[in-house]
Image (cartoon, rainbow, N blue to C red; front, side, top):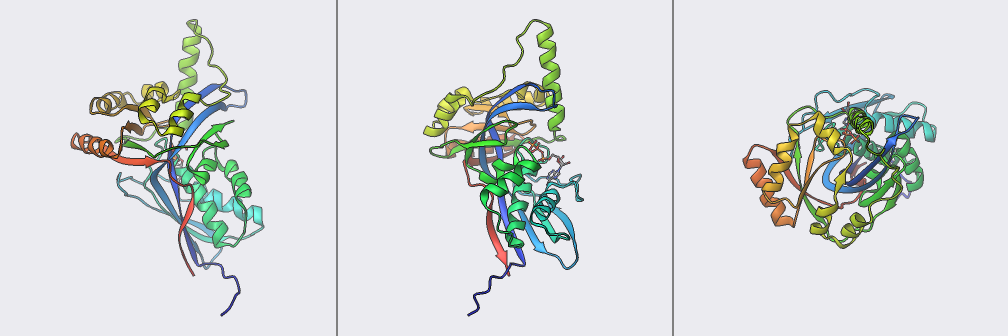
Length: 323
Ligand code: ATP
């Protein structure tokens, strides 16, 4: 039997979408960014990226949509702007592959521009898939550094689980989590929200409030300890009292049609409802798996694109490879 290491012909990696169960956003910095203190939770709605060795040099991208939330994929860039192409190019440059030859196929299940870090999950999955396809041998720390260069949410999609994110969200510390928490997501039927537009609206709302005498937003130095304790103990009722998202007023002001949906989810039995990240996806916290299934059915019967999920789940991981 040969012992020669063989690189695979294709590798599939799956990576999770996320919600922020707590998101504190600091004031606009001179560099245009905002410091955050975020508590991320990886959810069981996952993207797949398959990296296949191609006969000719180039990074080709294709996307298939659908999934349980029936995600439309028209409008996702298929050229070098796609985050999977940027991830593959960054890895190739880092390891000295001058002419990478790879086809990257995304199976999209996370809402596009939905505030769940779907593109970031794709980037994390592509990094790991190409690392395995090319036998590059980067370790977790090196992958994390490349991930941070691709976007603030990419390191978390690599790590998964639950984590505190400081800086712009990329400085991660694992947050211990007890029993899984059950959620119901509602994908927006309208267009997504651009993350920079939501931050811009937050800045505008804040400067309006400050000119009326409100205090400026504080710098977020640490995650809310009550959120971390509720996660650690897996206590959904306690978490419901303390989940919060500083981006929510801005997202709701750009997409006011979400307000009655939030109210409806709560009226149908959710312990709490929140805009996920920059929105417009909504996340409702349920008491347990049975309550989540019930809420999913109730929201679907009223025409909402709802899905019961749970988290924390693992970060980017190989699910298949072909030789
Ligand atoms: P965030 O990580 O800021 O929460 P999001 O989840 O709201 O982002 P994404 O779906 O990650 O939004 O992508 C936002 C935009 O990035 C899309 O509108 C699209 O133009 C571009 N994009 C690039 N690559 C991808 C990808 N692989 N999947 C989805 N969008 C992508």
